[in-house]
Length: 145
Picture: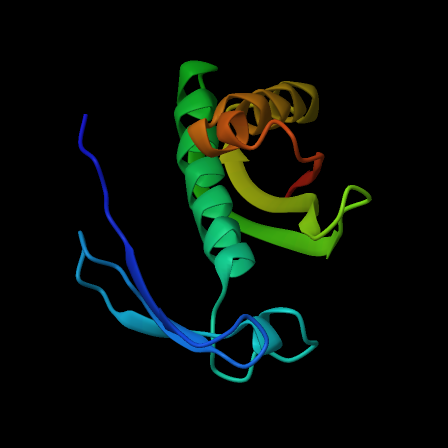
């Protein structure tokens, strides 16, 4: 299996510094990062680790769910997956991810509600990104459209 690479160049202190994260393997882009924007209410044109984790979680989950729907005998017409990743204070000091809320609205044929909910939960537990983030509570709101 392949290895994927990203690179970050950072200048300055945590509070006043900034940087750029480059999607090195895919070459899809280079994005500004800033702790001030990361910890603020508005991203202001920058990204940060939590948004990148949200992208990884939502795409990984969608792929895993699609595979499990097919294994269960269904067909995924479309999956709309959102991942909200929250950052907050760590009681031990510093910051930590305080939770990930997954929401999926699916157009699926060949599965009833109960079978869909089972594969949706299985996908949450078994996508590789969920497995990597076992220290973070991941919730799921899954519905059929």
